[in-house]
Image (cartoon, rainbow, N blue to C red; front, side, top):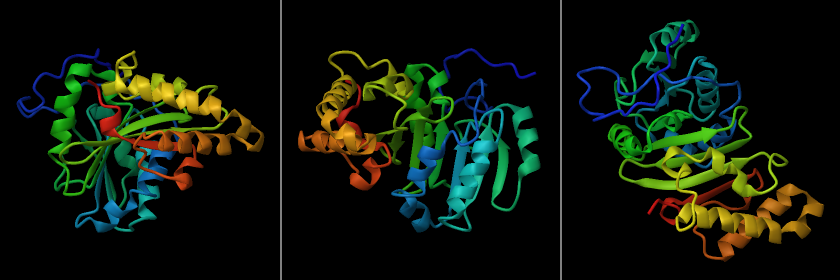
Amino acid sequence: MVVVQKAERVGSPRSRGGKPVGNITRGTTNPNRMRRLDRWLAGPQAWRLRAAVDPLVVDLGYGASPTTAVELFERLRAVRADVRVCGIEIEPDRVRSARALERPGLSFHLGGFELPVAGSPVLVRAFNVLRQYEEADVQGIWSLVQSRLAPGGLFIDGTSDEIGRRVTWVALGPERPLSLSFSVRFGSFELPSEVAERLPKALIHRNVPGEPIHAFLQAMDKAWLDAAPLASFGNRQRWTGMCRSLHDAGWPLQDGPARWRLGELTVAWEAVAPR
């Protein structure tokens, strides 16, 4: 039986006496839950993997089942055949069970945010992991993982619902956060702001008046409602119209129609960062 730790303070992530950094989490997951993020990594972010000297990727905190780590490996192998995906979990039984699925390019390791793998990863994915920690610990955890990234590397801190219909993630480079992305399944919401319940830990408690993320979500709702006449052409056209309105209003969106049509939207971190 796995004993799940209560969301404790991590303390100083760099001083754990050689022990894995982090707490045992619930580890719940479902097949295909991470497909929206994986599509983004294998799409507009694929250049990072192609340009990497060492195509090392880490799936951090893959949970009770290694299914999503295997899916990540298979999806990224289409981008670069020699990719190496290392799944990391802090609970020993989860690692022992996952090792039955190891193959060339896919391995599983015991550890935490210290990333106990040789080399500097070009991509690190931590999904539905930091959500179970204290907000006060987020910056220290971010910094620790960022310090392990390869030049041009990316750390993804994201959250999704149980079957991956509403997804958000923060993308961080080695030195700073870069962007916040939303990805939703059309028909799974009435207002875009409903995705607020799946915001990453750094933002989920900041959706209050006076905070930039609240202003952005309100702007999304207004643009969505204003685009209602496009609904006769489908929600895909309505979402695209919403994104175009946000862009025209001066919000620093980092993507374009090709991604908008997928139900995605990426905005520069500076526009939504906590005050």
